[in-house]
Image 1 (tube, rainbow, N blue to C red):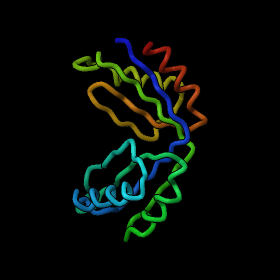
Image 2 (image 1 turned 90 degrees about the vertical axis):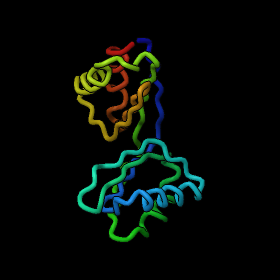
Image 3 (image 1 turned 120 degrees about the vertical axis):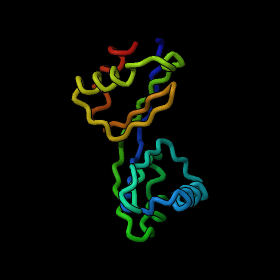
Image 4 (image 1 turned 135 degrees about the vertical axis):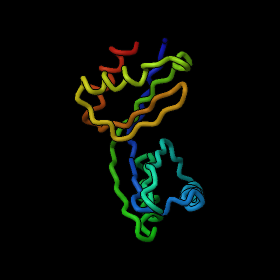
Length: 147
C-alpha cells in the first residue's frame, strides 16, 4: 500500500435526527441544500428506527448559517451541529480487496485517543472527521501506521 493522506479544516458536522426514513424525503433535503449552493461532503444515514432515521453530513463552516436557515424549518427534526472539525482522508487504490485497512485506521486513531465524529468509506478511501483538538495527534498516528 502507498496511501495518500489529505486533510481539510473548518468542517461542520450536521446531524438531522428523527427525520422520515423515506429516501425521497432525504433526497429533497439534499436537493434544497444544493439549491442554496452548498457543497455537502461526507454523508452517513443511520439504520431506520420504524419510520424515522438520522442523517449526518459535513460541509464547510462558512455554509453553516445558510444550512441552518433551512434545516431549522424541518418539522419534528432535531438538528445537532459540531463546527471547527477536520477531515482526514486516506486514499489508496491498493485498498481494494485488502482486508485490515480499516482496522489499522481504527487502531491508529485509538492509539492517539482521538474521537471519530463521522467516518465514510469506499473501496479506495477512508475519511474520518475529528475535532480540531484531536487533529494533530490523529494525523501523526495515521502517518506512522499507514505511510
